[in-house]
Length: 106
Image 1 (spheres, rainbow, N blue to C red):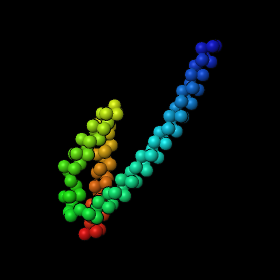
Image 2: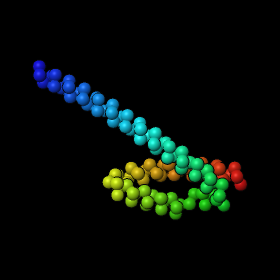
Image 3: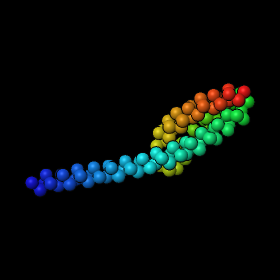
Image 4: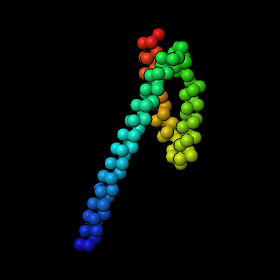
């Protein structure tokens, strides 16, 4: 019977720990959204300053950003592939936004 009670305590502790981790993840998500909002404001400004669609797409700039964030990930000992995938998706979405902004201001 002690084993069953021990398992119940372990399961309860695991649930409590998972709940705490989820709260922390939610807090990080809030911080990320705040930073994405800041990035969007900057992209909206950049979209009004570029001369053409090629300057918006800027594949060389994209690759420099990817190199930079991969290096930053490695310094922080996190998976650079996850960081790269996240950034590529984010950059793609922002390029689409910037293209729309550029078109509206041309």
